[in-house]
Length: 79
Image 1: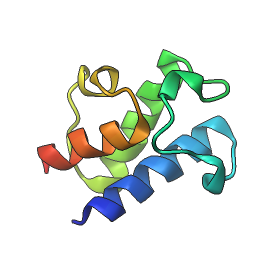
Image 2 (image 1 turned 90 degrees about the horizontal axis):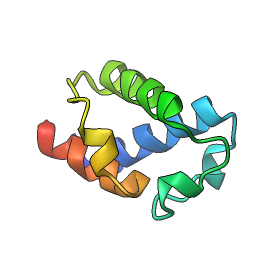
Image 3 (image 1 turned 60 degrees about the vertical axis):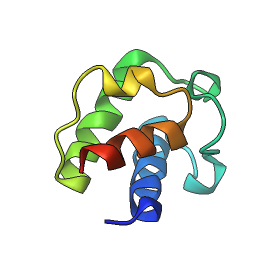
Image 4 (image 1 turned 180 degrees about the vertical axis):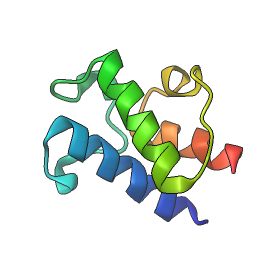
């Protein structure tokens, strides 16, 4: 699976959970600056990504990522 596919999945999951347009998700913006972001939303995003990408993501991974792109890179390493 390509890095672009993983980044796209992360952007889609964030957009869906935050009720935003996917085009408005800046993969390089620190995730804590995204509107309405909180830890429960991030955990929901992780569940969505596990389903979409067929990968198990340890609980600490999303909290090790500063940006959505960081999260995508960490997930890619698990594949």
